[in-house]
Image 1 (cartoon, rainbow over the protein chains, first blue to last red):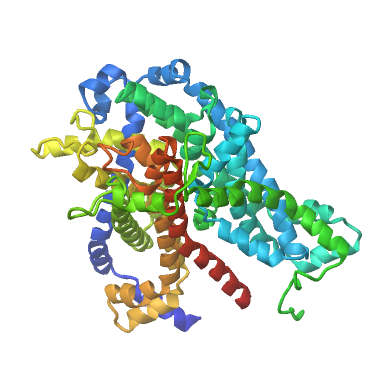
Image 2: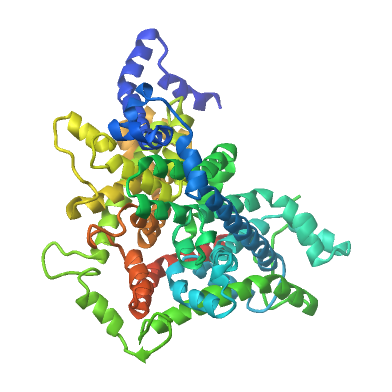
Length: 296
Length: 314
């Protein structure tokens, strides 16, 4: 160990002058990094500032004059109440929560079967499910819409979008959960079975409690996926009073064009939930997004 | 306690008692039914529809063979226009997307992963770059509409251009800038993903190897070029595939920022699929969906292959 630590210590600058040289040679790195980070922040800060400025100020000068303008919540109260973003926020929740819970539940059940039981064509079925992960949603638009329209007008309720999101979230859920479940200790599951636990008992009392990180990663990924989705809602939510926030924003865009006081407040409302999730659950959030990277 | 592990931990799928089989099937059945009804059957329907004429009711009104594909590829300048150079159309826009979006995300992501790796404020920098990943493409669209606004009193970019003495540019209003403007907005949103994956992979490279190279007098560039890059080939391929998938399905940000305009100059395949389907040509829309499915096919094969090889190793 001692010999291996030696080169690392050699690489460290020791005297003041050496440290100064090190800092100077690294300063381009710091400048580049800080410049890029600043550049990355500007668009979001611009939107945030704009959303708090009165319409007259936005029209007279740019958001970077933030310190010479008074800030207000007027834009938010207007989009929330007069433009229906408050209602759309509730719709977004109504769409997103079941669209997360359904694939989570059905996916975990199926993944248990693929990981811990044996039945005919199990492995073939699983390979097909892996293949389904990258089927583009576009292949389902026409047939699903036709199906929903002709059988109970599901597209006029939330059922249609729930089913669509569940179906296209399931392959990823099954894939992730199955891969996690098989890493659980076999002895534990065998012992529970020996003790007379039913398969559902093993699933509920052993597999699920031990798989919380994996379940949470998927839940966060799916929640954000559905919350942020525009395309599926455009197609599968036909009733205007049930439209979620992203669709509402495109309506604001086509009605008001470049009324940035309304648009910026609306966009910020749409961002607020993902931002909270990001800062509160950063670890699961990153894991969830990484896990979702195999999906289309 | 070295318990010898059997090669296949879970036995062959056709083994198992009758009770186990029935229970396994019952657990998997709800998911399989949902997938069969709402993913597999629709895909079959859409592939079939691609060979038919159709209408607003989405029925099969007449067999046309490959005419929908022929129409798209030879007779729809909005989709593919090879009549002059450089070629234009939605398909060509996707090529632009692949070349620019994938390259920039990879290069920027890799550079940030390497540069941020050593600094004390690494977490802060990474958070700033990664946060846009959380934001809806709809919100990203609005954010960048504001940046690109032609009015230098509103648009950040034109304020800079104006400040430097240039004339404001309508970035989203001109066919020759619109695609690049949207692509860069999306690069802004996706670079964080590339950075996080590559950074995690970099952390996995044993420091002994890097130290040994430094002791032997290798320059930082050579360490990056000859050690880091080869060791990053798998994560780089994973990120590239992810970015490729993103390009094939990109829709929301274009719908928000330009609705495919001006004219049809910022359309991409996913956009053409949407407009053809809901403007009375579901057959042609289905043909576009089939083209998208074909473009995804290599990724599908890769995923399945990767999974099977992992299982052989395990």
